[in-house]
View (cartoon, rainbow, N blue to C red):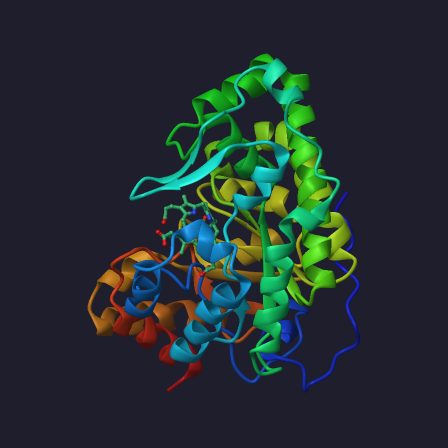
Length: 351
Ligand code: CP3
């Protein structure tokens, strides 16, 4: 059984393009924003990061909001995702997180055993993440009403994966081995994280987020059977409360065979990576849900004509069907040429 699509306010043609596309309403043109749109590929971002550490930036709402607001103006995108990260939510749950220089995230006390799962704290008091809600407020306050603010969180599998591995991983072996050998400990951990994510998303909505996205960045390492058994109930818990309030985007990468299950877990919009053609993905997801995607971020390293052609091919393939949000299939990579990002956006905007 699929949960019913989220309750949405009635159609209003003055609403932002992005919100209307999430609700499958007709739009004058396809809205566009990019995952990781504020990041190291932008010289302005690197200039700020020369002075401020990444976690410090996330924990300074005024600066975090400024980074995203400046990015939205520079790129001319149709939505602002708050500047933060997937992992700060894990700190108040007892995980010792660090963004080590040039290494990405490291968790110094990973969860490896059933006993370790017991020391992961329930996140009851969302106030310790108040800096994120302040970032939502400051971002909302600094932007035109036509640009919705997107809140976000990691999905239970991806967050649990970081807790268990202690960082990023190719094969997610520790994660799978806990899942397969200590199933009840896995479910305890994933459910604790799912409840935390649910509260965190609702708090972001209370602070002014008009859309929320759940990133299951690494879940594509699982088979559909494993997804259904170990992940789907937790992702559903994570998304359900937010979905009663605002449009939700459920994003995963790596395995197009999971698309029907992502839909089942929830999301008014399903995020699609480049490993499947967008029109084929949409047919699988069902045309009663919106889709977001799906240019390969590597295309942005090609020449400008190729960027324009490949962007246009995606637009042509969906042929203006209401409910398409243009995005990359995954986040923008460091060293991406800025002029190609601008070319992509100009192509979607038809200029
Ligand atoms: O999209 C945006 O511009 C908003 C901000 C945002 C960041 N991270 C900033 C960031 C968002 C939405 C995220 C989500 C995030 N964080 C994801 C999901 C998106 C995805 O790509 O699947 C993941 C997996 C993470 C975890 C994470 N954060 C990793 C693995 C790394 C290091 C590797 C990398 O690509 O930099 C980060 C660091 C991070 N998060 C940076 C930024 C701008 C770079 C930090 C720096 O300035 O050095």
